[in-house]
Image (cartoon, rainbow, N blue to C red; front, side, top):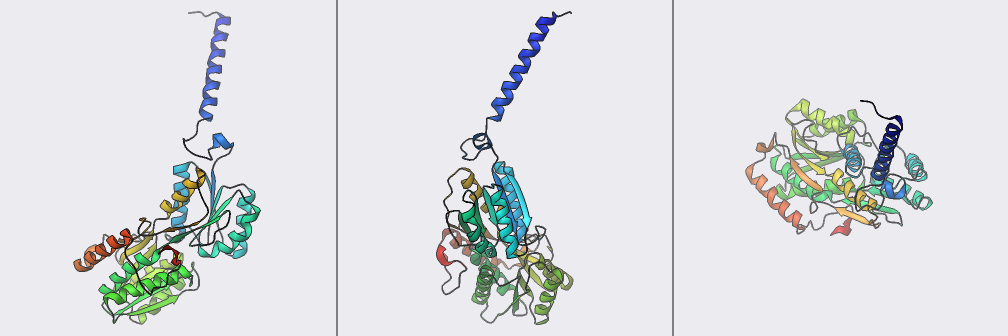
Length: 348
């Protein structure tokens, strides 16, 4: 069939016009109910993360990066991550993200607070949030995790199951949140076994796997048969030591570490960092965020004890029942540990 050339040209012009109008309409549509959509501001929601260690640690830093990915997937954010090692790098990269106009920057750890407070006044449109931090300014906020309650549960497990009467706690460095969680762990162990001995030591860094293994072997040499570790990448060496011994159990921390060495891991004290990060980012994107210290713990299902299903039956039924009862109290906000130091005592 033949078509008149002028009529054909008019038809193609109409099609191109309709397509152009459709593209413009679609570009103007963003998710409903948000305050920082690209269609409204002319730019995407941008979120960055600074970690003090490698995101391959399967612990503190890996959980934070999973949180950054959750923000990307759930809120359509553009994301960026930098691993930092020194306080000078903390400040340098905070400034870099502020200068680039990022909406939200997480400094993942207690040690980032001072840099955030110094940098924030120069970039008032960027919100700086430090985890395990309690500093608040016009555009600085903190997220604290009540790690003590779930650490207490880990202590109950260790004190109930130790055959030698000696358990250990190994940390990267002696930061206040780590020290407080170890004290809660010791309290839980002593409440079920007053004669228990608790060894506590610090590696001096968060990255040295060999040093973590050596610290574990040293505690094992002093009789410890259950080790609670909070050492990030260095903690992988603790799992290695227990795996080679097979007469020692490990309790993981920060992320669900039950799969690292399932044959020797009783459970993990888990911080649900993706959930926590998303809560903050959603408020920021919607324009509803007020700088404050956000306290999250067992009540909010952010810090939880997760038993390793592979070894769950090795925990005696009476101990499992005790854990269940304690968790009910913790979720209800009625559990208290009088006399225990808390890293951030403002929550209770």
